Length: 111
Length: 116
Image (tube, rainbow over all chains, first blue to last red; front, side, top):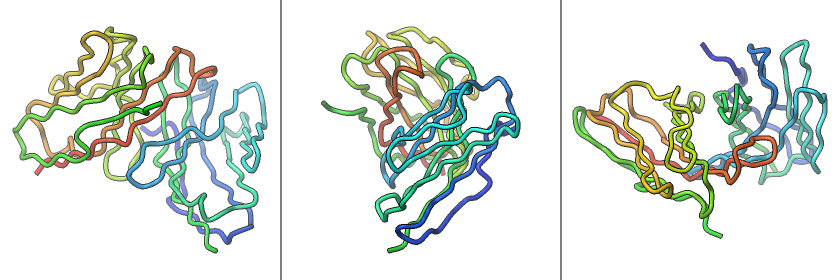
């Protein structure tokens, strides 16, 4: 039973436009959410996070939005760059240091 | 500073054989984690060490998997005997502190295990 779902396996965006990656979760006990980025043959790299007490966190071109009532979060990348092409994983803290990940969304930014 | 390293990068074995994966965390990181990603699906937590102690092993699939971290430095994950469904990419991660909110988990490049 998948508790974190990324329903879009892939997304293609033109360079300079906005990329929006979505994530839904089912466990209302999750209190901290993270996005990781993964290039081929590398491990996931932490990108940005948000606590469940906030609804937005911004870091440069990356913004994460959290809608607790809908159990939905999204990652916005503006403007998108070709170097942003990667697999993006949404993750949530279940308890302690245990992370629950989604299956990932492949982002392709076309130049 | 060296990142998390994993060895081997790839392993191909036959069903019933034994394989041992190794992870070297970032120096000074007391927390070490193992994860697995099967065939493009979600990355699943396997277990968490704090130094040499298993803090949480709730994600270990079954008793064919044995993780150790003798001396609290590097860790090994042994699969014996391997089954077809064990194929996937095994990631190791480490963090300095034990709090996700104040500390980041740094991932290694993974070991791709193929069981034939």
